[in-house]
Length: 170
Image (cartoon, rainbow, N blue to C red; front, side, top):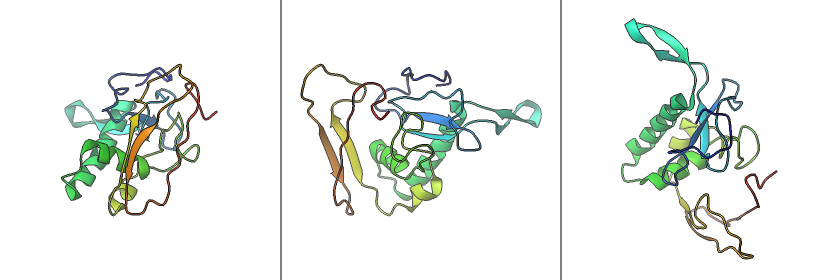
């Protein structure tokens, strides 16, 4: 979304959607870009050159211009691996992203800025899927059941971190 808030935006807030924020040419989060717990990663989306009517070009901004960058990278991944499912594509996009604000996931850039080179350089993408709790769910219980699957030939260990509230890292 382009509201510059942490309010969950739909359809990008749906679990089956790859949610993308926008960055500037300096790898800062664009002022209009939504952020929050549903952001998967970010892509350039500020002051981009696009086609216009009458064969001209103009400069545009918005997450609607970030999404095609991510779609193009997903297409590159699928061109080499046509049997990959959407969850595996999401995993590759996130694990191959470049940290631009904080190390690891954060509410502003998600997993970081997507990288086409990194994404197509992963030899065999693993699978990482959080089964429980559901994304964007909450509970008042004292105990939270966490169930996930992880598969990759290079996995040596897995660290699961959790926190309270909208912004558990800060």
